[in-house]
Image (cartoon, rainbow, N blue to C red; front, side, top):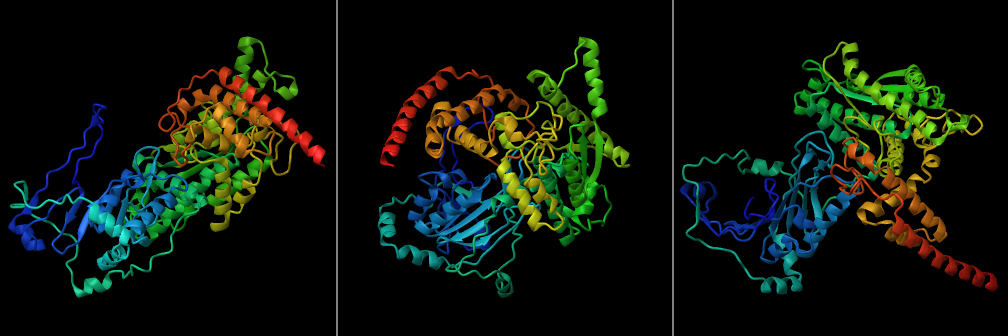
Length: 620
């Protein structure tokens, strides 16, 4: 309902447009009167008054989140039904906030709040998560699903506007404020909207006793129990729906995933399995519906085929390959194979040592030098180069297989390569540029390691046959790019190299750093100040060392974010340089002034800490 022009930034000129109000006008014409028994409809600021005394208004998506929300002034003018046609994208744990805003709006002001949100991929990194709602006097009386592969879902409820009027009348303070509110409702004027010569099409059913009996009866004073998915459910359902939109709209024949048997690539495989579950369920419920038709097109099947199980669909579209080297363990090889079987993917296990040896042989012939791992007497530079060449070869092999596997299987089309780097690794730069983190899309690039592990455990318990995911979630993360030290290897990891030891920080600490850096907009000094309080159990010198280590690696690896794979947006602290974090990628990695200030603060804190220890010893 476009009643008032709103201000904003012009996509063509980049200049701010002025807010433009419409002058009040009335609707005239015999057709309008014939259909709706109404000759005029006064338009005011964002609201419309109907002849049956019902008053409707609207506010935009963003206005709901502002201090002076439009629904407040509208409610004080007597508007009973408020609509919000929103375009709100998904972020983890955001739905609860969205619900609270609408519940509090109608609990404070009374009224009926109609909330509709877009659903689906916007052609980029964000997913709009639907969840249309009807809220009455602080209670939700109808709620759509937050995640679904169907593009449209309609919810409805029968409400009594007298309950709104009674609710407002019971609050004397509301009445006082409403009386003070200046009414801007217009009457008839020279400006009119004529409907002469216009044909009105109304696909809605005309009222009848039979239609009324079929409508859901929801009592205003009742309300529904809120349905808010857990973060673990959001982590798998949101990216699953986003990937389905991306797959069917891209024209691809499926996905290719380098499956290492670790938590990250296994999370991507599990999300594809959830996607197949959603699509299979929708297709079987309505074999002639849009989802079933798209499923047949993507899977290259003829009508009236629908998948008999999620595994049957996964075998058509998901191709997984374990790309092992002499540094890979039997533990991860086994996990990858078992997970591929559980998902139903077209799975293979290959060795890429021949390719690694060939490239190193070229280097040896050219330079006359043979690089070694640090455990075998090599330098750090040699060690990193030997690790990175394995990772980069996997990216090259991934794109080769993605192009040719449909041909191998006698099918047409191409495969989208899936990346599997999480948000914490992107923030810290713990990835090889142009390795398997380089792909076509990445469903977990905006999700933290801790949330991914909880998601794996959730899927293992909620989806039959995925018990291997719990084993993967509980295993220490490892890159498996160095030779195995059998004396240091653990049974759970199967390898002596672990991610957290390589990074010099834990994934839990990375979560703190990410939120403080992006959401709280902290630099080194302000982050140190906050963490002194949050990590009060640690000495200030240790906190300082952790902050310095993070900012060094953050700045020295920041350039990697300029080429990062487009990722599903799930966290507000996503380091994706292309859209959500527009900071520069060239920093003074020494952070000279900031680190000097931190050192001064540590020196002062050490004196205080030493004094506190002495006082404690005296008291003891």
